[in-house]
Length: 83
Image 1 (cartoon, rainbow, N blue to C red):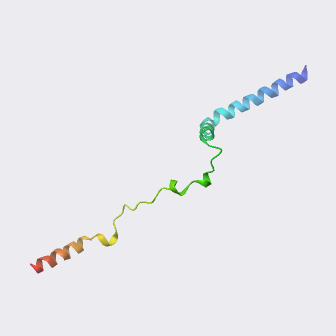
Image 2: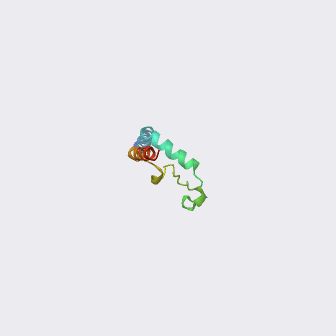
């Protein structure tokens, strides 16, 4: 009866340890399991077509198109001299 009792105690300790790890790491394990569920084993992420890459946008104005306040002042002075 001693070996059976020892086996039950070891199995209980392993179950308790597994449960403690599950509870301690629940947020991380949930994210990992969700990621695995969403993954497609037939798709290789390195084989993504070029069309899927986002195109860079140039929303900034060109430097030569902009004027500083001193440029505008000199343009206004030149216009006043011409008039």
